[in-house]
Length: 213
Image (cartoon, rainbow, N blue to C red; front, side, top):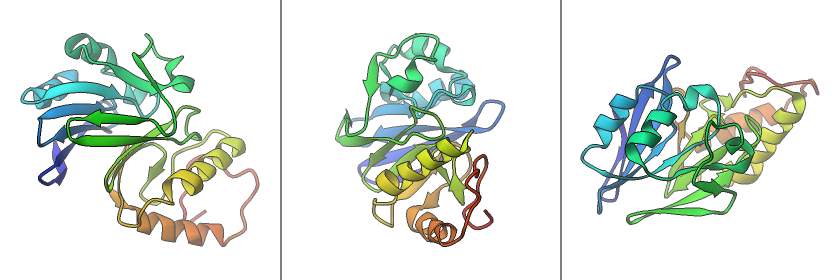
């Protein structure tokens, strides 16, 4: 467990869990001790232990890939809190979520408010969650590049998601991805500007890095 953000209003913990070291995030409102979980990769007992001194309110899914939902069934049974996901990914889950989220929705957690960004590309229903200068980005963006895409059309979608939804956010936004370390949005904007200045094969997709593609 790593504390990646903490002040008088918020605490965010990152746990690297499951067989692929996928990030799960626990966000806690410091004023009320209400908490939410972003993604459920595995090792449910570790997540439950970290939630013990808080009041869990939601499980939020950034997307439906198996490495982000390995502990979902057990956590839903234990926590009995609403599961929230986008409809385009929710249909692939074992059981339906209690909440369907879309672009522009908000979620309240104690004194905190989260804005929901629908960022398709990695999956049709990929979501990011933003509160203040903190962005929980799932597999939409990583340090150095976008999330993996399965076709050129999906790559175009993720680029649109980034340019229309993510990159307009303030430069000092901290980005917490579904795998790996935190990044700062200005760095990603600057590297994307380099990427955009170059010619690319129209069939580009897969694992793409801004500075080497």
